[in-house]
Length: 244
Image 1 (cartoon, rainbow, N blue to C red):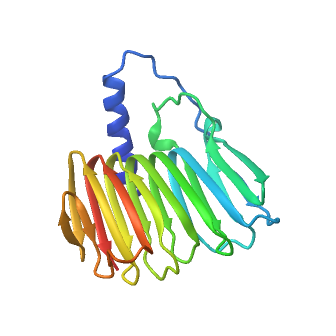
Image 2 (cartoon, rainbow, N blue to C red):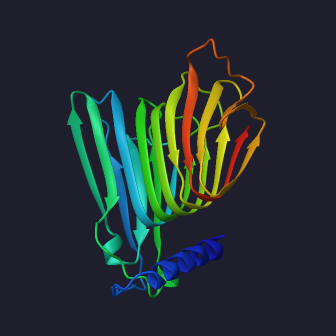
């Protein structure tokens, strides 16, 4: 899986290099991994806005934090060192974890290590925003109190698991780039998906088409308002939506 992912990154970046007249900047790949533990401690927040922005690497998100967020990051390129900020505004916590801005050189892409693994709290509602550039992204959202979800991906493999039981519906916006995406959906709450397709092969498993790029699961009832509502802007590659 990792070799396939790194190969996809290399092909994409070589294409970019071939289309650009700019000089590619060098970076230094270190033999030893830098490891950082990241914790957002509990406070009086009643909800969290979480923004995760990874430009290059692997990202995993799931429930299981003992604090608001428990996580770790490992990297071997200094420019991939993350920035972490937290603010509390009117009982709502604002979390941003992102990589330093700037251009990256990609001459030894095969030696780059950059792995993010975050556990999120399931005790309070979350607005979750994920922006992933060239990455392998796995979002296991089962058991979390998602209120709003936004995921934007560039190049790579993406898995978003929204199966399981949900007490309330929420809005989700997906924008995929180039690669393979799998979105796993629940069966016990209504789901409606509105799609805009690019050059992409799509598969909708256990979903029925209402026409004009709209799909619903069996639990969807138009007379009810408590649904998971997904707007999906699909780029290039393969995208699968399936009900579990």
